[in-house]
Length: 351
Image (cartoon, rainbow, N blue to C red; front, side, top):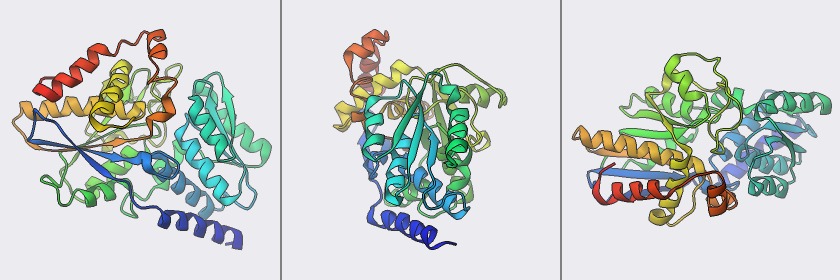
């Protein structure tokens, strides 16, 4: 191992030691005191999202495999948050970084990537980000991170402070320390793979539910078993949903999938702003819809217990989209009926 690689690994480890773990935030459902709901707030990472963990793992994986050396340009295909986090680590190591992203990616994410010294290469068709990333990496003699392939193998799902391990440690003193459900979305599939593998490895009774937005193939693939599903365009919820089944998506560790209307995701984050006092990104809204479905099922079965989901990133990255009434109106998204539904659920327990 070269001195530069050894120092790079040390710098990433030092960044990890400077960061405390993210908070686990309880949210009471007034009408359902038998259910405890928790949000793992991943927006508080230094680069602002759940993808900070993935970016750290991908850089360590690339360094230790000999793929990243001093001066290596880093290229990534991303819908935004992973690119922001990778730009953070690229700057830490003094490496050039290029994010290949769909043109519809939020302006706030583009600014965040540029803030960390990265460059954004925008494409018209989201399905072309893979090939364009490979082309740039070849042209620049760089390394294509390929989060969609390596997410599930770069992360140590057994332990090493992965997101599953930290959640169970934080739940230890709660009334129901082993959650009935963990709810997350899938972009690469790496987070769901980590959760699903960890609960099996630790012999836990927790089940994993993956929520999928409109215009994404993960739900269809899970139901049919077909990994060759395809669709055109983006999902409408940045960070989750894909036009193809990614290599890191492991359906066999998932217990249930729920498809979520995009308008329900957008309404959910407006509701969560009311009850949590903070703005969350769209994927958190998708998670919350899944939580409501599962809690309703638990209540119907006469069960008590806990449910854990994620705040994936900061909603301030979406002020010009999900939180913009004009943007919602232009897209034909009437969130008012859904807001009323979420409020009724909290106040009466009826979903």
